[in-house]
Image 1: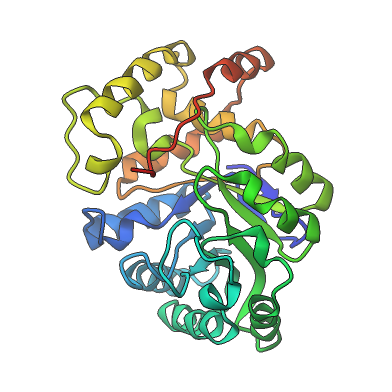
Image 2 (image 1 turned 90 degrees about the vertical axis):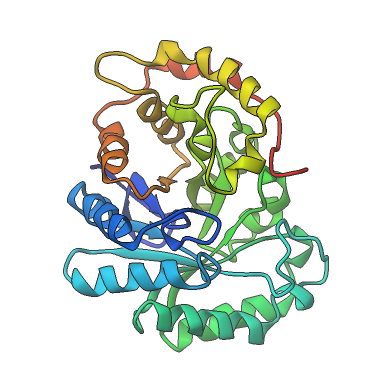
Length: 318
């Protein structure tokens, strides 16, 4: 495993991170025993960055990660979590930050996460949605400041709205947060246009989420694939058919030493602005496969060719 520094924080985090939405259950089919095995596999592979959220399984994901960290106190585990918007709207809709992230709400949620994690200091606390109209609102900033002062969190960040990197340009330029989390994969390359260069210039860490496009870039789906989780609405029959055509157009990335999933992760890591690519799973087998992505990298020719595979779409919108 290779490690990169998360912006100006000084935190050395694994290039492959563990996204902990799936292990929380809720919209996913999850089993705690399998989740525990996946967490252990991640640590065995050198993965030290675990990204969760208060809303993942209504705190269950945080509780699993907290217990896991407590069982491995000397392994350098780094935990990021997220404060849900008070109005529970994803993506952010209200232009008034006091309705979405008032100071009291941010602090209350952070304390819930702190307790779920076993009274463990939160390495990175993120707002779970964002609008640049909130950039100068005092509430969320005062909350982060107080939580730092009280030792509840180390660093602060924001998870940007789905497929909307332009919504955080002012935030990236402001220096008010240490890290941004954004959807970035072979299909959605839009953050690389303007957001990533700005993050590099301002030394803001970048967490690339959905690097495998909710599993499609692992290359295992067929037209007959049926989903037992929320993805049944994400990959509708017509959408799935189109996805598979586009995945078939990427098969040239596969070879004896590299799977499509590994190539997709290497694509994310080929951008120097990206600190880590986080992928979620309850499969230890998939964890080992993902971690091996760091054993190689895309050639310059491959990376350039992948620019032709940009696909502007947003399946989260119905």
